[in-house]
Image 1: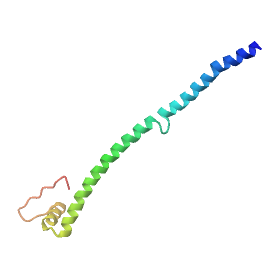
Image 2 (image 1 turned 90 degrees about the vertical axis):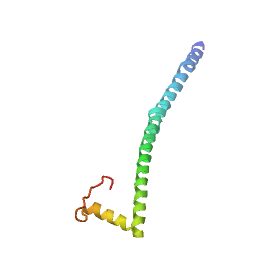
Image 3 (image 1 turned 90 degrees about the horizontal axis):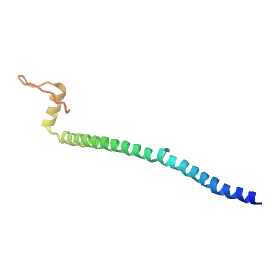
Image 4 (image 1 turned 60 degrees about the vertical axis):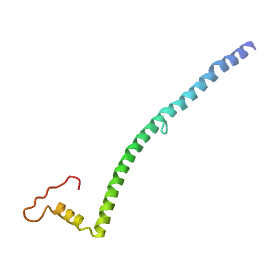
Length: 103
């Protein structure tokens, strides 16, 4: 009878904490390295930062283009002439056209 009690007590003292520790280690590893863990969160935040920066650049370019389109629709002759000279690299006699890198 004493042997059974001793075996049951040692089982409880040794095996239950070992199983608990194993389960905690399993879920802890997924907390760090899992599909939705902390490392994946850092990667997602880095990608978000890059995409937000790209979005701000594209929004700036879009606002510039919207402004130029509004000027063209209004019939701004200076803009039309600037675009023609820039695209065609042509001008009046004795004029020099210098291309700009921005357009």
